[in-house]
Length: 323
Ligand SMILES: Nc1ncnc2c1ncn2[C@@H]1O[C@H](COP(=O)(O)O)[C@@H](OP(=O)(O)O)[C@H]1O
Ligand SMILES: [Mg+2]
Ligand SMILES: [Mg+2]
Ligand SMILES: [Mg+2]
Image (cartoon, rainbow, N blue to C red; front, top):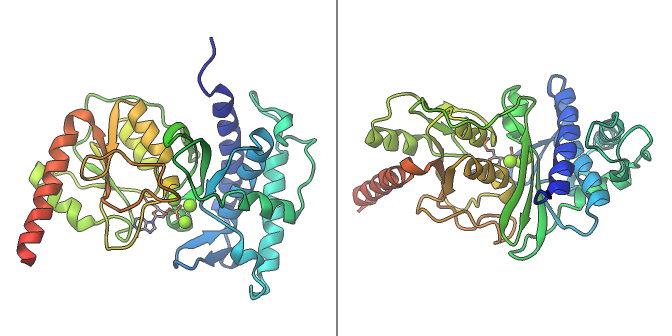
């Protein structure tokens, strides 16, 4: 029996595991000058770059014609005005990515994907090019991969939660989604799901004030579980909370497709539903972002309507108080 996207699933597992072994090795001993602040003021570390280089290199061999929407690019690394320590950062990327690509082959791995002890050593230029395979602008038609080499970089820097994420999107639909954080997330819909929300640790990523108001309306008394990354979607899928909750904290920010693709699929495959706060499905065909930000809500199908209604109520109350 042929399984849909069987090869893609195997490549995704291999790529994410190799990238994750790299991020785990950096996790505990990251030094300050291996972190760069991006134009939008968010952090990116040597591990984000190296993990995207590993996944980009493997996808280039396994699916050379597939475009990639990756979070990171190498503008800061290649810039003529980059500070002198950037040279060291680039060297570290070369070492880390080569180490991960050369790890022994695991069951399911294929040397033809440029991995294993006999794989060629990649130069720094080749690895930066592999990162920059991720500059695709997104599309509503055809195949494309999306990479979040470290989702939850701020959690990573705090020594807390993060995940390495990879998904295949075909004609705007997520067909394969994997993330890995060094832990496994077996899917089980528990009958005793704690009545608590799962939301960002960072109050700048999701409005904690709004979730508090919504919780009150829904009669949720347990405090929310605040953790970084798409691990929240995994936690929802296995019954560690009743809803994934993410509401805009201001105007102008658009949610990125790589922050949600794997999670959306994992929750729907567990029997749940993910939508924006109006109940519209997330649209992965609009480009690198999900478009205008109406927030993201995931839950069991049976709870979804009540949560959206509570959000609606809080929004209209706040509109009325402004009027
Ligand atoms: N103002 C904002 N609103 C919502 N999400 C934001 C944001 N600024 C950054 N993010 C995204 O939030 C992600 C982390 O989500 P979470 O809070 O659930 O851990 C970040 O992923 P990266 O860490 O990959 O950059 C980043 O893309
Ligand atoms: Mg992310
Ligand atoms: Mg990231
Ligand atoms: Mg980031």
